[in-house]
Image (cartoon, rainbow, N blue to C red; front, top):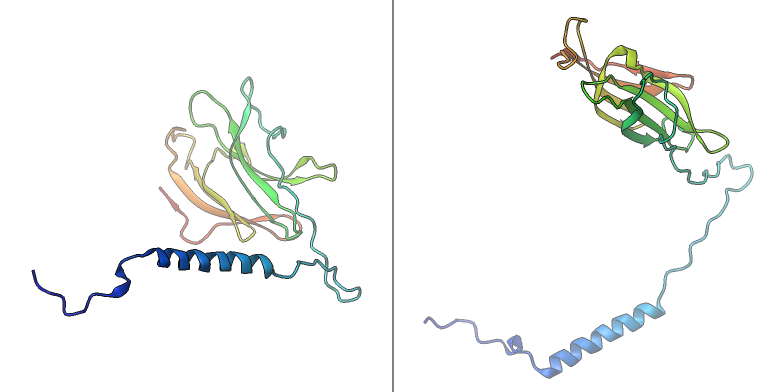
Amino acid sequence: MQQSAVPELAHTRTRPIHWVATATALAGVVALSSVIRPGSATAAQPAPGTGAKPLPAAVAPPDPAGVDFPLECGPVKAVVVKKATGDLDGDGRPETVAVVHCDAPMGTPPDGVYVLTRAADGKPRLVATLVAPRARLTVTGFGIRAATVSATLLGYSSDAVPSCCPDTRTPAGWRWNGKAFLRSTPAGAHRV
């Protein structure tokens, strides 16, 4: 065995005094932290005439459960398959965007995309249809980012294409312009 060129360090073996010193230091930190505290938080309203608006109270996004969506599903129910929330109109209150289709036991039912807001009575209210089920589209890649609803729409180039196998793929986005949701299709939209 080769000898180390560094002399053995004195503190490599723990002794009871080391444990006592560590415990004393830890007790000192705990005691000091209970004495020194940050100042209490205060909430101040903006001064009158400064033009600053007080922030609205936090509001829960509308829940799409129980909303009567404009779908004709016959004997089956409409089901919310995806949802996302965000403040789409900049009013400080979140909206919910829901992807809904009929709960068909077979096949690929078309999706509808709907925007919900909270009515004055607190109940969810349908305010816009972004994709109608009659368009025969399936929605994937769905979400909200920077007040824009985005999705990839899978569809059909003609009625001859079987509903199992969409042959078009179109990215789309919707943004509120103050009066309505405007749809944009980014460059590079293509067929599958």
